[in-house]
Image (cartoon, rainbow, N blue to C red):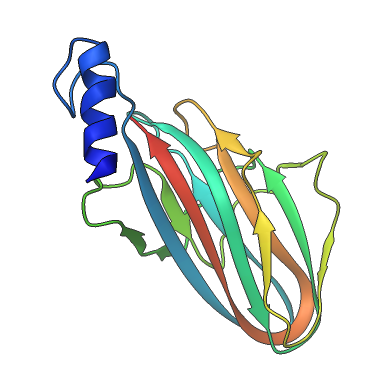
Length: 165
């Protein structure tokens, strides 16, 4: 109730009804990729569409694996074209404009300066803070990649992000 009153007060201050005007709408999404590697590498990609994109702000990545793995983070590689992943949205959210890809074939891209390789211990789920990473603009070569170096492991990666309207 307090939140609704605060929202109404803020909207009134701008002379707008709630849900209209200058208030920013943020929608939250997630996608999960399972992996089963036998001396192989894999990658999960979140990428912008060719047109009609929104600003993507990443929140977290959740990673778990039955064996120790090494993660790398890159951006803006050649567009992924296989294998599409299901994007889940919060109930009130619009359909996501960004797409998700498991076992992605996205190009190498550029390593993130702030992100050295991350070591994930076996059977020790980890949460990575991705809040400093954003994707802006149209184009399928605008993407974020979370890769697992060659390993023999079974696990999952979930990435949560927001899109701003």
